[in-house]
Length: 539
Image 1 (cartoon, rainbow, N blue to C red):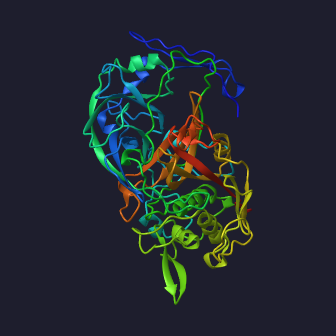
Image 2: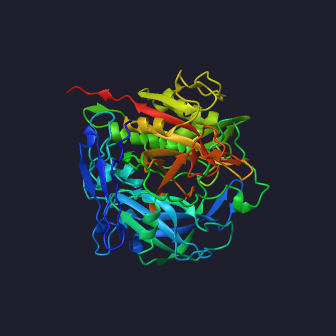
Image 3: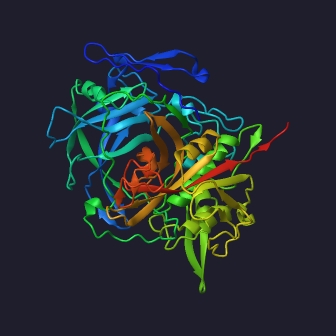
């Protein structure tokens, strides 16, 4: 991937504001200039955004009224003060800490959160072919139709993906430190902040902070939300996280810290580059069902993308809620997909999670359960085999995962299906390249307390990767509130994370080769790429 160097980026604040970028690269046009006048940077109205205080309800216990904030942009309401839609672009949040030593100077709490803009009422755009930078989301158009759940059941024809129009977007979110500069607990009722939208990323320099301070800050209410998204065992086999011995407030490490702006634009600042796939489907997950759901979301994404004439590629089941319900026949445990035509229920049943009785119960999926759940489903003739998928991965201790490869298959046949390792640890560059070639990618990440002890994990589908201001970002989708609640209908979310090797569990600043998420003690352990092999239909 080429770095497109910024040769000129001038910022002038006060009475006038302008920025210019000279991107010298033939693929973008030699000597082109992009001017961002002051009027292009606007303060967003309160209705377009929300500030939330997170209570984590996890296997290790409840971390109530934490320091963790979640900033949310409601894409359906992303309008300027005149009611005109804005986007695509970037949102930055400058927060005024209540106990700050300099109340007049905000901290840069949310850094260049990418927003696609409101949805455009249009039919789905078909995808004819393989990879490339398919960024319809940049223009407010999804690759997949937002039919919800009943839409799949009632559409009648399994392969008909073109009728409904798109008029709903998942909210875009990012975690941030709700109490910057201090560790605390207890409710936060409101915050004072400036929320700015710009069509281009803002450089992380002090002049931008001073410019943001010229806007009138607003008071925003802070609502309480509960996040219980988890369910991924560690790559080393651990599946039962235990409560931390340190204070609850530090059980997940500290939340993402504010940006520390540089005094001037770096000489090596690179032009922003990103690849964005469709941020759907994003189905509601059962409790601790993140691994089967991430894999089901990935497979359904591939069908939405490649099952379009002249190509054919589809999964046998419907993408509707379900579980791999545990039961017994005498002394033998059995797992049954409920309902039997649910894609995620079938994957879940092959993964063989413990204690799964309904959508609100269930244990973690082990790493071997991830492998046998996905590969067992794809190769079992009883579920309708799907052999048009090629896998590759980064992370884990095994060069090969899959059939006869370092995992307990639990008597599940995986039909010789395997994945080859392409790196000891997941890297942003690898994920970016896989996405850019039209492949689906899922990741497994773990969180640790301040002492470096493993406290749980989660798995999500990655739908985007970006390089902005020399910082690397991933965009993911999941169900923040697992269980029988349809939260992804009422309050859907996607997330943006900055990823970099900023340290290892319990040792900030001591790299270990793994990507941390938002500079926190959360690390990406495993990344899996799904490459569809569609059939070409010749009329």
